[in-house]
Image (cartoon, rainbow, N blue to C red; front, side, top):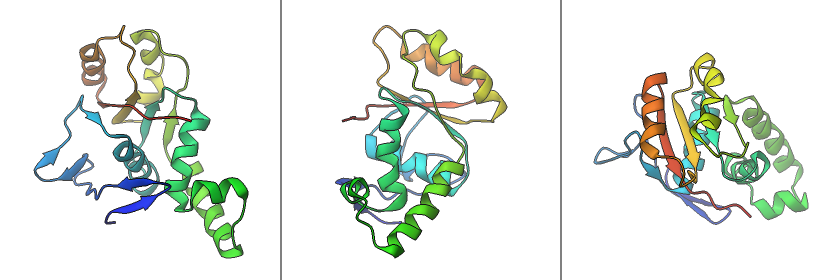
Length: 168
């Protein structure tokens, strides 16, 4: 895919080998890593939309705020242009097709306020039933021990990645 800039984000070149997160062979992200925002957003699109690998996201913002970050990446149309609705007929057609792909992608978002590990565990049925292997947690509350979340992921069978996504 190569590096590209979408809506001010410099996207990294990412190769997904064996459905594992990998920037390049010498720079792997392990279970429990804190990932940069751009990498997480791009990975959600690549896994969920392109590879149809189920992902689950616990954003610190709302689901709508997360989608406002994902839509420009998926459609490759600047956010302001989308907001203004100033798209050519060809762009509208592409936008419609790309939005359908995003809508149909196996991406689950839980935007309830997280106060304890039990809030995370409330999503466990979906995680198990949908065979989700990648969970992204944005801005883990200080009251929750990161190692508890990682242990929960290992017990249930998924990898946990942490991030800090800036919302408007």
